[in-house]
Image 1 (cartoon, rainbow, N blue to C red):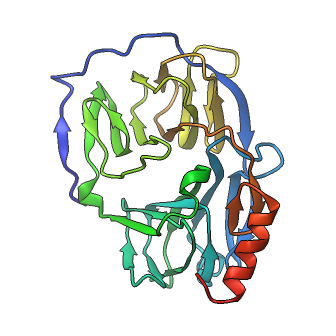
Image 2: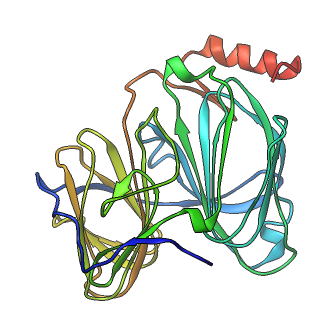
Length: 297
């Protein structure tokens, strides 16, 4: 794929300052299925980590067996939050009742704001081969839950790649890293979403917005995040970072690593969840169900 490179290691950004963030909890995903039977691993949104405000759910889907993903995610509703799909491999077609349609390919991102209500589907456009990626659910604050739906379809070539240090590259999906800003607009949470690739023996430090909740998820190899007792993460480990610092150190001392680093501003508001609806009260959930059944989405 064609990737825009905006900065090289020869012109590194100023090193971040402030206290170093450390991992406070390590979580392993649980096998589950969703949609019409797609097999996936649920990392956030399970008993070990119900949510990490503002992040409601994180799924990794990864299979080269067509039966695991072919049924896809037929048309279904959402209200009150955002869904973020990031593809590493495979082809998935998005369609919704707002007239949006887009093809998700390797390296692309779909950031969909459900707002007051949307019906959408995500269906595979392949019958064999590897299907691999992530879906993240991001909450919306009470004032934005009934906003108009919005759809951001980000092609691979629109996501900039930056050299953060020798042997360390980042694709900047949202937020900023290495002086480069990602293409996704996520104003409600001021989100940061980075896909990091580290060669063995490399390391980097990244600034994180003060007060943001943040996590790292290692999807290949192994990484060392911070310097605390829980710093070593293996493939499939999610590390929750504390909120005390303004930077995070990530290294790959023993093997190459690939991971996502995600951060967002917490809302500290009540959360009421029922399937594809995320609101602030149970009364709002009941209203969402009634609106959906009455065709008002």
